[in-house]
Length: 176
Ligand code: GDP
Ligand code: MG
Image 1 (tube, rainbow, N blue to C red):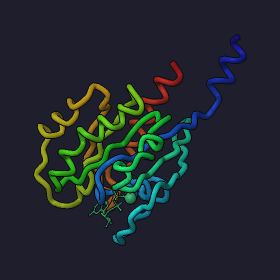
Image 2 (cartoon, rainbow, N blue to C red; image 1 turned 30 degrees about the vertical axis):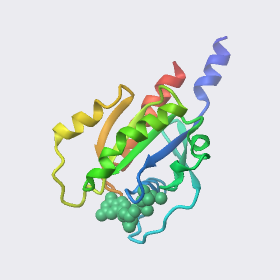
Image 3 (spheres, protein in one colour; image 1 turned 180 degrees about the vertical axis):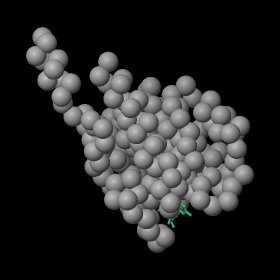
Image 4 (cartoon, protein in one colour; image 1 turned 60 degrees about the vertical axis):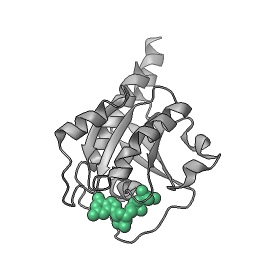
């Protein structure tokens, strides 16, 4: 009993995290910054899905990065299924992408109930007017929103933090 518990504690967790958000908000760029510590100004739209692996703490994150327009296709639900957590991304300077956050949260939860979500308000290196109050409102969109961050895939700010926060949350709930 004790032996099997110790074994369990040593095991690395590997789980799926899905990047969700409107087209062009920086989903692919956030994954690139986090996984390779790189950034490109080039606009390469992701076709279908790409899966990147990254180990942090005691976990291996399998990051599913989905093309922006895929949500309208029937296959979208399969992309979401089995995820342990989601990063919902918006462009801090494009209000319509922030307004989409709620719909993205609903989509995530229509596939996986109760999965924790971190919200990334990306491109925070560009001048913006979004304040703490707006962030608090986003946090209140769902009880499963763990945290809201202003991120910059370009400069790297808060990129590791957001994945770490989600991992801490997921690891705790899985090990319980
Ligand atoms: P996706 O469609 O959500 O995967 O978005 P991409 O990652 O392809 O990014 C779309 C565009 O925004 C690209 O031209 C990126 O270089 C740019 N971009 C992404 N993240 C940032 C950021 O944090 N700051 C700035 N200034 N540009 C960014
Ligand atoms: Mg992309």
